[in-house]
Length: 170
Image (cartoon, rainbow, N blue to C red):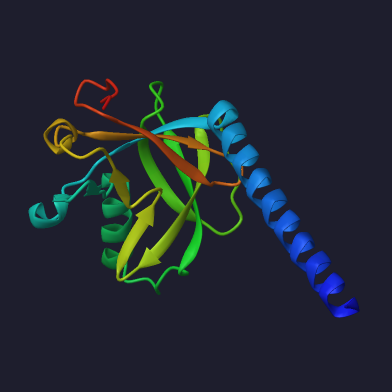
């Protein structure tokens, strides 16, 4: 009898902690969407066979390609599997350059963005974008990704933009 009561309290406590954790995470993401720095990354071409797979689109960014090419040209050691970039923005919040940063110090018009090295590919931000069924043709015109970035470099993709910088709405 006593064991059942303890088990019920442990289950209730675990459930409560899980709900608290999920709600904190949601709150943090909502704050990032409201207060995060706007960053626009130019999309880079991907393998056309993987561009549209069902109801999502594989994303790659020009900034990541240029960093990875620079990295191999200079024949440096591999970057860490995760780390931080300092990204320079123009007046329209578009990323124009970036560099790897161990101990970053930011100038005006610069933001931090986290990266991951996955299967010999540098990932910045979101590697794919999910959309409603039947919307593939509309999103095939995407040329930019719009992000909100927190001070620690965490980036959330908010919209895809066309070549004129207008949001592509579903």
